[in-house]
Every structure is written in structure tokens, then in C-alpha cells.
Amino acid sequence: MTDTERPLAPDDLAHRLTEVFDLVGPLYRRAQRKVEEGVPIEGLSVGVRAVLNLLRENGPMTVPQMGRAQALSRQFVQRTVNDAAARRLVESIPNPAHQRSSLIRLTDDGRAAITAVMTREHALLRQVGGDLTDADVTACVRVLTAMLAFLDNVDVD
Image (cartoon, rainbow, N blue to C red):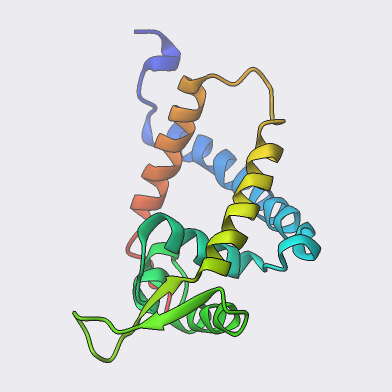
């Protein structure tokens, strides 16, 4: 086993993960600005885009479910859902499991909007380059997933 394959000592790991945190913030903010550059095309805020994509990936969900999935307050998600509903991108439907918490689902317009955003983002991300390998991306996803799981108990409401 080489040094790069050996697990890090806790202090060394903490220092390396700090490097990841220091990159994630600017990456998120720049990605957010890039998404919002498409406002004239799709007219979606980052929040609405996140809701639409969550519904695209998971099907109908309640607002609390979306809040937990995105680590956002229920109130923030509700405002975002209201914005999307006002634009007829999502609609409320009865929830057979819980009468007081409706399910939110994509409308045809919402599906078309998120498909357009995802297509544009895919084209942009194809340009990343840097000779990244599948193993590089797999390792990145593994690290970010572990960090997210560690912080899973943080209250967002």
C-alpha cells in the first residue's frame, strides 16, 4: 500500500478536509451564479432549479421531505415551491400518506424547464477537462458523501 492509499491520521485528515471545505464554498457560489446567468433563458433561481431537479430525480415529494433532502429549512423550501407554483412549474396533489402535507410534483412546463437547465449545465460541465478520471470523480463523490453524512444531524429548521 502506497502512502497515498493509506488512511490519514485524524489530524491530517482534518487538515485535508479543510482544503475541501475551502473549495466547496467558492465552487457552490460560482455554480450558483452560473445557473442564474441562464435566467433569461429559463427564468429559474437556484432554489427553484434545486426543487425542480429534486422532483425530477425523486418524483412527487412533500415540502418537509425536500427540505431534509436539501438541508434547507422547510420555510425556505415552501417559499421556493410557492415561486415555482406561481410560474406553473409545480403543482400540489393529495398525499395519500398524510392529509395535511400535500405532495408537490412537476408540471409539464416544470419538466421542460429543468430539462433545459440540465442540458445547458451538462454542456458546460463537458468543458471542465483537466484529465480527470472516473476514479478521481468517484473519490471526490466518496469524500463529499462522507462529509455530508457526518453533518447529517445538523438542524436546518
